[in-house]
Picture 1 (cartoon, rainbow, N blue to C red):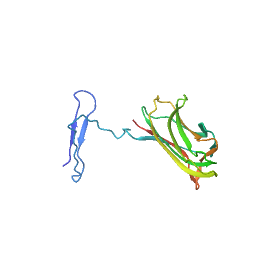
Picture 2: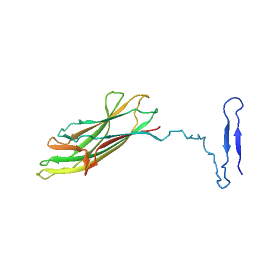
Picture 3: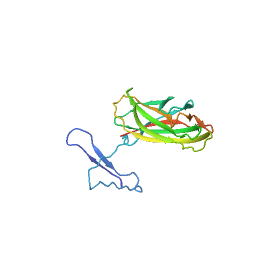
Picture 4: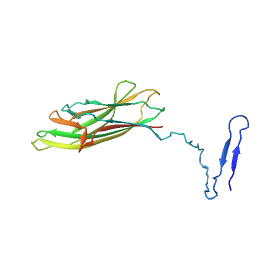
Length: 197
């Protein structure tokens, strides 16, 4: 049996219709909650959707022996949210080559900072990778470091949000290198995903 129930407003406005499937073999049940009110999402609702994705690969390997954070040359990326109150899912995948001599700490630290509308930067995430080397010989280590961070920036529509990557070595005798590729495959990249509120 097919049919349609239509509700018309008492004055003005549009109507609301419930229509059964066109085939009797496609029975459907619509159940309303009995514990609270509910809102139906439309086909154009953006709740929880990924609204845009921007990828920034590292163009050139970056090397440092600095024991303080230094910005990775050319490794920042801006994103302009398309909706209000969006979150930005920040994903960093990096390949790191660490060289240390003597008994120095071979750690490398990577930090992500965020600027809204060309304002000052705020640190939002940091992670380290490496090892303490008790041997006195020179060591070479290849590591991977990943940072996943769901950012909740406070912005106005039209504002551009920029994320940058900084690196430091645990000791000035340690050389930390962010690699562009491992085995001819992209090793370091920054992904920014706008997630609808």
